[in-house]
Image 1 (spheres, rainbow, N blue to C red):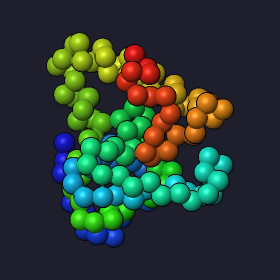
Image 2 (tube, rainbow, N blue to C red):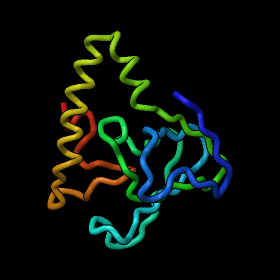
Image 3 (cartoon, rainbow, N blue to C red):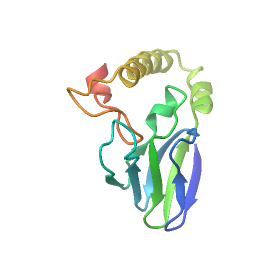
Length: 136
């Protein structure tokens, strides 16, 4: 896990850039803006994230390209979980590896075959129906 520190107004990531990994907000506030030019986002909307909120979890389970923008509303600290480091950690824990593979494959399925009739399209903040209890 890497710690990333951003000042007020600093960009965390931008639309169409490749995700480094998943982020967890440790302190401060982040504003996520979906790209209104995508079919999945008819209007520009802002989502404000705080302590404990995740961004780009999809990057842990697939090669993820950001579909919006994230910037620091205030000075903030984020934990960055890089997929390759997580995978190396899991290798030594058979039970956790099995759980992660099962969860990851179901997450990926819901990411690549969204059901907009039941929810919204995936974005950097949410992939519908991928909470652990909804999958396992």
